[in-house]
Length: 347
Ligand SMILES: Cc1cc2nc3c(=O)[nH]c(=O)nc-3n(C[C@H](O)[C@H](O)[C@H](O)COP(=O)(O)O)c2cc1C
Image 1 (cartoon, rainbow, N blue to C red):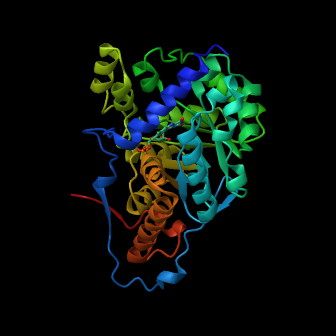
Image 2 (cartoon, helix red, strand yellow):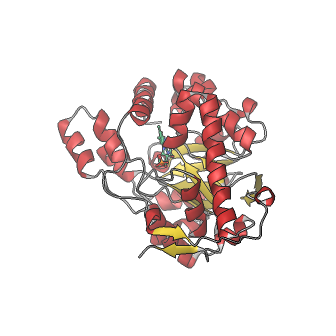
């Protein structure tokens, strides 16, 4: 592969973790758009809280809750520790988990153990990950097969991150001709291909093209949460790249807008909402706007960094919040919430 040295990638991954755990990396002005909505309160739900059902199925996987641990990390000792904590939580709560970009593994297979989570998550849908742009930099179908095999993954996520690559010093910026390569990959891989952004959102028009190409599911990863322009600005040593990142800190399509835009033409297509979701109320709003799952990245990373107990507690709180929405809207399951009839637009 035509890549920078693996140690450079490792260094970058370590910086990403450090900045995302400790830094201020939220979009300063743009928000998810979920704050434009609230639920109609139902004071007579005629439900027993203990009977509420938040189980679901996504891409054929039975899940105990409509929650995703979004793709984050791997490649360093700390990343390995965090991945194992995330994986144990995914196994315990019976929810899927993505790992961070595995590109570094193609150069440095010996660090595979920082991604090796299957042993602690034997029943969890695990999602492999690589930047779609790598298909233009020497990564082929066989390489994708390799990273899927190393993780024993149930699906491959391709992330689209043009803004991040534009801000990153020596980023990979040739995004030409990717769609046919994504189409080939969808045809040739044995597992489903999911496409996500990294916090700048996927529009309805782009989703149309991806769906046409055979992509099995889309994660909108919209704006309003972690801003990768801001993260790359924080680690840039070149003042021009730093300024560029700061200028584009608010760039992107809010998560709520992506969902509505895509759902308009694809009412039943498997769709994940992520980007700025903070709690179970956000997940519930995203589901009422049409998402099948809600994904969280940085909130889970911060909890996992503290301890496994903190992460478990964070997920339990999130699920309790989601169930409270069901209870107080009179929805006994996710299909009723999904209908969206209890969601109101704020004046
Ligand atoms: C430390 C960190 C590393 C990330 N690395 C990846 C990655 O390798 N691949 C990917 O698709 N997304 C990656 N993301 C992006 C997230 O999956 C997600 O799309 C984005 O952070 C927005 O979600 P959030 O607002 O909940 O953080 C990363 C996020 C964080 C916080």
